[in-house]
Amino acid sequence: MKEYNIEDLVKDINFEENSIAYIKNDIVLTQKEVDILKELDINYKSYTSMSSLIFALDEYADDDIELEEVLKDMADRNYYMNVNK
Image (cartoon, rainbow, N blue to C red):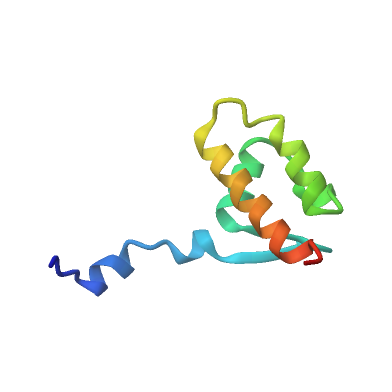
């Protein structure tokens, strides 16, 4: 059985990048997502819902694996936070 050094594993995690921020209304983004949106020059603060932001961001996702992963994470978060189950 392989042994892991927990301290080494934890130091490699970027907690700041993965911290969640409530932007407004139901828009909840990680710092990494905010950084990507800024790089794409998308004014995420102008959107009123996660769904509309996801829809707008989907236009940029063509063959960009990192962006597709971010979109998936945002869509999952939107589902769990905003869909009545």
